[in-house]
Length: 253
Ligand code: IPE
Ligand code: IPE
Ligand code: MG
Image 1 (cartoon, rainbow, N blue to C red):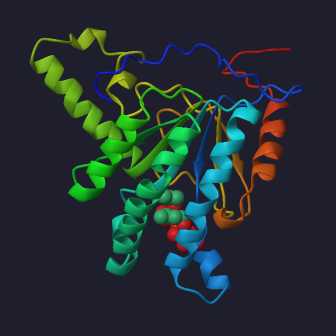
Image 2 (image 1 turned 45 degrees about the horizontal axis):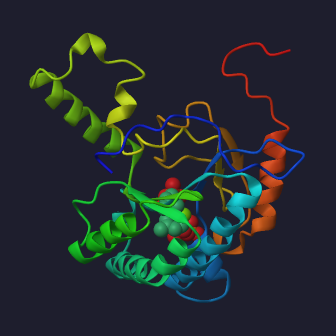
């Protein structure tokens, strides 16, 4: 997405479920696939397949809940530390997922983007990712961003490298580097910041996800394992979000 203009942060055109102001951008750390499989005496990849199948329902309920942007964490820069069998199985699952869901997501008017470092990914997978972005580029109903080989520290390091290059080339003056400039170098430059970050599986940590972007996000850490997550649960979390008072450092009462 290098040539896309920055997001204008204008409010979502699709209205939320009447009665609550929901989050326009939800980001999800889809965790717990391995434990879900283990509880059933099955290999971890069985859990990953079940997890991938949950994504469709969640994407489909977004317009109804007023969620214009959905960002999901599929594979972290640290997940390469897993066994070769699990990593290879996940890469093959991503390839199959894209091939299988491409037409369906396009028919649902979903625009798909990927964030993360593509350099380490298999060329066949990268080609499918490019194709998915290209085919869906004119869609605007839901913006689905898949974080694949994504790590926030890696993202900030890559952004800083490009920024430093622009300074070295005389395109950017050091005194112009500020809170507005820096995020234009991040992978998420065309996306608004997440309003709500959800992590499933009971772990209360960020695990290197959207560190810059979630500075003022609301968080939900829930016990549900990702393959058990439903649209109904997302709706509940969106309603609870609607009752929160986001102060951004100010006093609102
Ligand atoms: C999340 O599920 C999916 C990925 C990290 C790829 P896990 O595989 O981390 O599942 P648990 O945390 O071991 O249960
Ligand atoms: C975070 O989950 C990454 C994804 C969901 C893709 P992990 O399972 O990798 O996180 P840790 O290792 O428990 O922190
Ligand atoms: Mg995990």
